[in-house]
Length: 344
Image (cartoon, rainbow, N blue to C red; front, side):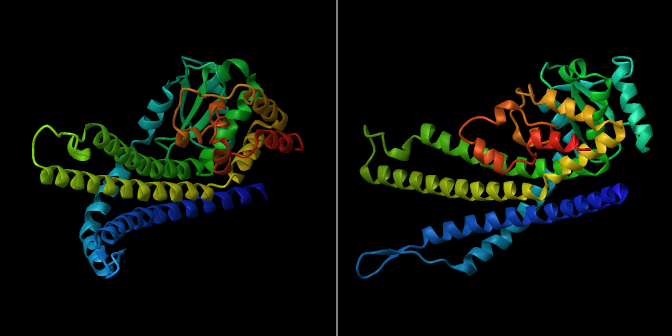
């Protein structure tokens, strides 16, 4: 029955991966169309007989420019996605400052991974270590060449062999269930949209502070008409940037919504798989209890990468956005996971 459950989980994750691949272009193209529509709407105002400004949307004009922009947008996003998708290994390793771990470096860890892989008949993934006293672990990769299990030095030093086997078994189950592929797609999608948002924000910042004639502050010379034109052009550009930022924010919200496709049940499935592989559910429960006391990595400032971790880092549970972060979290409560494992 457990084997059938795993096959079902793999099939569902594959379907969700395809859905995300299809949904993301729709979000991007919808954002582009919305941006063009807002530009057309605010640029076609006219005064009625009472002096009121009325705006109208010309869908034909919007569609015309959208169809001309479509090939460029698809090409740019497609190239970006392919590069990010296939460079995910170096991207994640750089984000967490990980380095490869060989059998010579740590025979204990390597032997645990090897024995667990032999138990479930899977290829041995790359093993990475992060030199950090905090406790965490995660799996990543999209195929046998890139599958990786990453552990912090803190978790290696604190956990005993059975607890460490439970954690590694959990991460190997993520790989077996194709969870990592689904998460990598999510990371790439959110990364693209958040990068575009950052670029728009930076453009707005530079324009406000270094735009010069936007506010018509150069009154020492030049005529009033030129200053008025400069001010009007500047405000027009600002309006375009604000519209672009609003569209990006909406797109980013919808990419966060797609994270709901990454069910929190995958963590419970990985816990069950890890407990089965190590043969001791209480050992994994004990490991999770220890990890929850000091979950890292605090140096990782990217929530999209942090969603790979076995436990959510401390700094991502605090602050004004903690409620929203919990709402969109891909991880269930650690205490609930421990309670379930202790019922095995």
